[in-house]
Length: 254
Image (cartoon, rainbow, N blue to C red; front, side, top):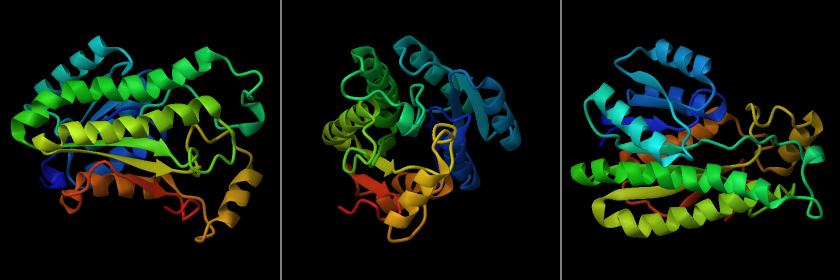
């Protein structure tokens, strides 16, 4: 299925990286469901930019299965068909400020629970709601947003990194389970992005240090990561599933 034929749900799509992913799909001609939890004004403004025939902003907390079911019902009613593509981008509240992180001696289990709920429960909820529609049309693309930190923990964000590592495992088991339905499941893992809402607290010297450590001598932008998301949704990736693509300027090489 060509990108212009797809109906794409981007969770956490109202701002930051999610908004860049929404814009990239819109430029490719896709229909987009811009999911948000609390960034209603930003999501509505983004949807207005592309118009109601191409974009709709819908509120839902993806950690709540009931709200996700209603999200899919409204999305399918708006566009008159099933969601073909899900980008699990929503992130539990988190600030990438290494100096303020919880260290090993002080981090609490509720901090882990919050991240696991946002990354793993959220992705499970959207995937389960998407399966009937994707299976019915024998086409589906699920793209999870990960991180390079579990392979290169330059800053020990224990809770965030553990949750994203679990999401990678879920990505691979879902790929094995859903492949017979022609549903692919992949992950795109960036490093520190310059700049999103989550990385706005990162000191400038950290950006400079990471840039100097990459072969490309630069920090990846949200737009560059969005390009990789589109690849996994495109026909060029039709035989790719269960994979994790690092988009970090070569900082981590697999």
